[in-house]
Image 1: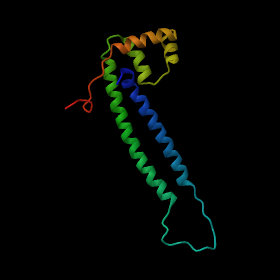
Image 2: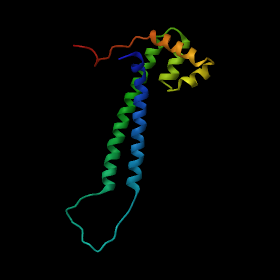
Image 3: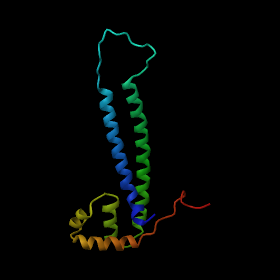
Image 4: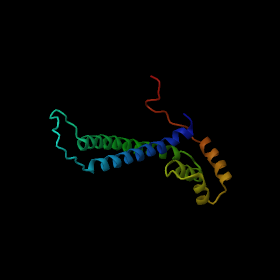
Length: 142
């Protein structure tokens, strides 16, 4: 895993959480829709389908999954903060925090730091070169 991949994990996880939140919203909309069809036809008593109950069950499962992802994101951000703090240069730290913790674009970072985009890329390259990725428990060979 490259340094950029390591630092970019938080962004990707944040995007997945946002996607799941959208799914929950969609399921909530589905669960709150109440439609009924009145016909003279008798219903099959063995047919046990309830879209509302199914949607509520999926919502609960998805919310539990989102909570696990949020816990993982918080832990991952804490780990990334610790890695960024190992960089001695505060300018490098600021750039890395803005990009990999606040998820700002390189253009926005250049404006905020009052540099050209080319200079921001040079700073980024130097900053990434100073970082070493910590070994993880699950990455270690036993």
